Image (cartoon, rainbow, N blue to C red; front, side, top):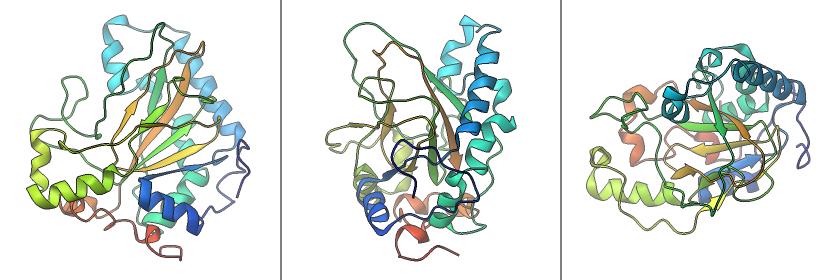
Amino acid sequence: MAAPGARGSGADERRVLSDAQRAALRRDGYVVLPGAVPGPLVDRALAAINQSLGKGLDPRRLEEYRSRSFCPELQKDGAITDLAVRSEVWAAAESLLGAGRVKRPRTGQIALCFPAPGVPGRAHPHLDGMYSPTNGVPRGDVLSFTMLAGVMLSDVPAPSSGNLVVWPGTHEAYQDYFRRRGPKALLEGMPDVPLGAPVPVTGHAGDAVLCHWQLAHAAGPNTSPHVRYAAYFRLEHVDHGRQRWECLTDIWREWPGATDGDRAG
């Protein structure tokens, strides 16, 4: 395993989570993989993003960029998708969901968080794939998936640096909620359950974070002097389309490698 803060050596180094990491993933709903993405891939992605930003942003589309992706013309570019499929992120995902059981992502979300002055505001928890006026999800549906994989493209060393914010354990709390109310209760809005204290995820460029889809999370505030760069990938088990509602009440159905000590096959 790579040391904290180090950048990984690429897809040739097969990352399988330790017993402690799998236990943390099951308990908290997420796990950080230090140094999962090699430096050249991080630099290539940053170069492409910054070249795109240098051409200017359409101020009329800022809400769309925030809810869908900045630099949308790059979402299918290898400079972005290689962050997931040519790094230890892919090996780790397959070790958890099953070798050959993860749909190859065709796009990535380029997520930028610009500095904002003042006192940090409250982060608002959500689950991806729920309808909003700007995110492109059809009203009356939920576009769920299996795993959210995030790649840090800049250092996020402290809270209020544009961190991904997570609410540990909410994947389990939501499972209990949907077992009581039924999975389609999600169409009524976010479940009303106690969330506990939020945790801002810190790390370095090249680190990755893997989250269960059913984990409450949010984009945190950025009061640092730096733009926060990251890329996110929505990874889907090959059977997810036919069992997506059942997964809300059986959260490890698509995660065989999270619940045993062997690499999923």
